[in-house]
Image (cartoon, rainbow, N blue to C red):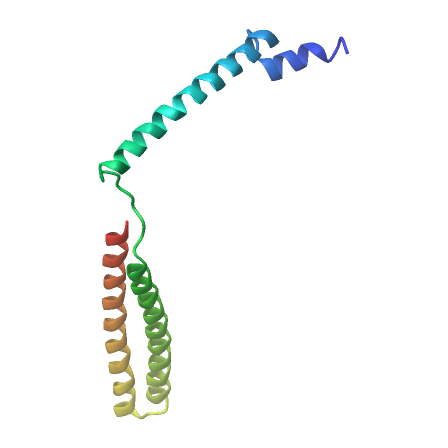
Length: 128
């Protein structure tokens, strides 16, 4: 026990503190917090009474719109991959007219994806 005691004092209490000062400091902080809490609670209740309390809760409509945009972006990404694949396969088989339609569809879906991303960013900025 004599060997371990200096290490316990160093790591638990610190170098300059003893057990009595640590316990008294703890009680002093606890008491000041206990007396400070009713004052803070009284201030909040006064703000509520005057209708000046500001609460920030995310709007469920904006969350739903953002979720809709995510789904739309996922769908456009799948459509881009599919139309680009069809365009490439048509081009590889020598059907250049159909390949052009496939690549045009890829471009349209890409523009729609960019539009959806921009809308989602606007909704996200408005929420936070």
